[in-house]
Every structure is written in C-alpha cells, then in structure tokens.
Image (cartoon, rainbow, N blue to C red; front, top):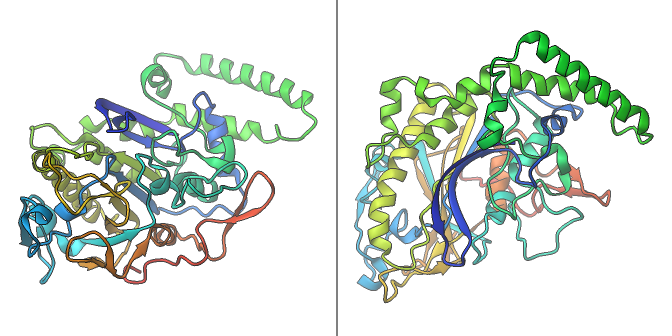
Length: 431
C-alpha cells in the first residue's frame, strides 16, 4: 500500500479525525513489509491489464440535494439557497456551483438514488460495498482495492497495486497481510529512493536479506516461506525503479495541464492530479479523499467553498484521462458515506441522511451523459430506480474485468465468498 497524507482538517461531528490523503493499498495495521504487499501479485492466473479505478471519497457526507438533485419546486427550507443550471446534455440540470461539470456532462453520469448506506462516519461501506452492521465472514470483508490487488496484482513492475481508502474500519479483511500497507510518507519517504546508496552496497543488503530469509525458510516447516525470493526481488524493483517516484513528483507535470487543477485559492489540487499520474504509471486503484462535507451548520457557506474545488478537480481529472486515451480504461467514482437531510435545520445546515445519497461516475467505458434514478419531491427517499451500493460495486468490478457472479475469494475459515451479494448486478444503465 502507498499512502500520502495531507494536512489535517479537524474532526467530524462524532469526533472522528478527518484528513485529506491519497492512499494506494489496503487499509490495515502498519509495519508490514513491501514483500508482503507484493505477494498479492503471485496469485495464479493474474491477468495483466491497464484497467484502473480512482475513487474520490467525500468524507463527512455530501448534500445530494445541493449537487445533483436540486428540488427547484420545493419550499425554501427544502430547496435551500442554490439554483440549478442546464448542462451540456438536454434535460439534465445540476448545481450552479458546478459549471465545469455541467459543461462536460457528456463525460459524466450521476446516480441520484443510491441506497444501502448507514448513518455512520465510516468509509467501510463505500470501500467494501458491505454493511459493517451485519455479520462478517472470518477475517472481515476486504476493501475494493484489496480485492483488485489480490485478483490482478500490479499493472507494472516497480509499482505496487493500489488499494482502498483510509479509515480504521477499511482493511484488507480476510485477504490478509499480502494486501498490507506500504507508506512512502514521513520516515518511510526516504525508502523510495536509494539516497546515495551504491549498487554494490545495495547488493550487500540484498544478500544479507537473502541469508536471513534462508534461515527463516529452513526453520519453517509449513511451506509459507516459499517464494519469498520472488517477493523480495519485486520489493527491490520498487525501490530501484524510478517509475513510482516519477509519478509522485507532480512538479514535473506540464504547466498547462497542472493549471487545470488550480483551485479557488490559487493552489493546485494536487491529489486529483496525482491520481491521474499514478494510474498512468500502472497503479490499479487510487483513493483520493476530498474532505469537508460534514455540514450540520452553515451548509451553504461551506458548499460555496467546497463545490468549486470539487468541480475543478473532477473536471480536470476526467478531461485529462480523455486526452491521454485513458478514459475507457480508468473508472472514476466520487461519493460519500451518506447524504444529508432534506430539510435545512435551524443552523442553516443539513444533518446525516442515510436513506438515499448520490454518486458521480466517469470513464471506464461507461454510458455517460445521464442521470440515473430519482428521489421524491423532498429528496428524502428513492422514488425511481433505487441503486444499492452493491450494484455500484458490481459495476466497478465489471469495469476491471471481474465477474462478480463467478469469482469468489476464500475467507479465513476456508469458505468461498462472493465479492458482492449475487442479487446485485452491475448497473445496466451504465454498462
């Protein structure tokens, strides 16, 4: 796993810390070695491809009624302060503070009727497609990225498979330490390059490591140590290859391209740009956190700041993917843990609302330029085409070439587990 932490952003209403970050890899306990991470690549039958997923997670829970589902004919206490504007696609209207998305709506699709989430500041259901309030298999449900890593491994030598989103509940689950994290930030950042270490000295270290591994294998009667030479070789490839280091250095991006990602404060929305650079380098699953959506008060003041930057980041990212010929291979999804209440509260805010929420998708060869589903006149219930989050996950896996009706993974009790419940198929409107 690769995780890049951003500046702290305070805490949610329930006291959970929030922080912008970009993370590649499963969310698990720290301290796992890179060879452990790369064991996922050694699974039999891995299919090398250029397919990838970028998940833009919006912690705090964005207000669907103020983005893609504005109730123009509802009373003020429901409609709020924003008006809707037309998009490039006739009949589709979205928030006035999303003009760049509106101008490029032929490249996007929104689901206004996502159901199956929980009233909980947790990324678990967005990362796994499952509810943590229901019984879990032995070892716990794995995240989306952990599954992709297990089934498909790295897309390029020297680049780890990318997994999941940050959060204490979002872990590789029963897939285990093979999908554990590698964190090139803080003290570990220096490990991403040789930093003056000569090739001869590196060979000495590699030889010493091999001797330790030989001792461990000799002492191990279970056979679990077999193949560590391969995993260690791949670990050295990551350290000695420039591919990942180059992708992480956004300062090398073309100035004209980087300027598209410039936010309202004049700074580059680096994580959106970094996400594109990483999938282009061969990373399979990038999760970008864009926080600040817990709007129990001053909802509209906050969204006047949030929405323009979200508009810029998403538009620049998707335009970039299209221009680089990656739009059919890279699926982008943006969503949060739940929606917000239909009625504006006494503090000019909206509270948690898990009955319905929204998701924005692009790329992946999806059928874009549409709105899917609808809510009632107050935006409180899915009135047309409710889309379960399991269907969204089935769609994401489908775009990666994974058949959720056939593929299973074995939990720690030895039982096969489907990636999503069989009742949930890919969203047919998108495929």
